[in-house]
Length: 124
Ligand code: HEM
Image (tube, rainbow, N blue to C red):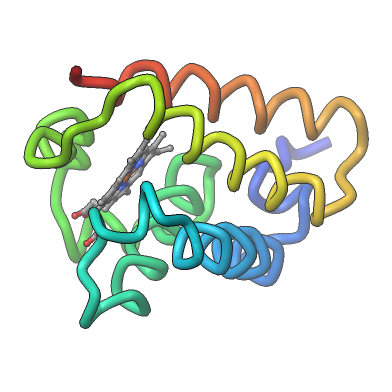
């Protein structure tokens, strides 16, 4: 059998669209996180996160074409991300991942990555 990517396994682009839409709905209403984001480009922020995640999980490489190498730690350096911001980010992501109703194994795969990545983005 050909190796299906995780991106395909969980439903491809529509799944990632749902994930980031739910996530950003939470972030936009969060008094700690919302001020960090570009107030005039929420749609752009949503697209950048979605394309990054799609690429990371084996989908199209549009992110790389548009943004180059991710260098995520460097790109987050301008934002003060301490434990409070990290936990708030993870709380909205947890809610968004829950909304996808993945299998237990898929959920564990995605969530394990999110926790690891959020820890590594902490810079305060
Ligand atoms: C961009 C905050 C964690 C992936 C951003 C931006 C902010 C932000 C304010 C700028 C929005 C934009 O214009 O794109 C945070 C906070 C985090 C966090 C507070 C808490 C830990 C993460 C994690 C990932 C991630 C864990 C990956 C799984 C991205 C990506 C971009 C981005 C891909 C766009 C980079 C670009 O191409 O410019 N983040 N982030 N972030 N974040 Fe995060």
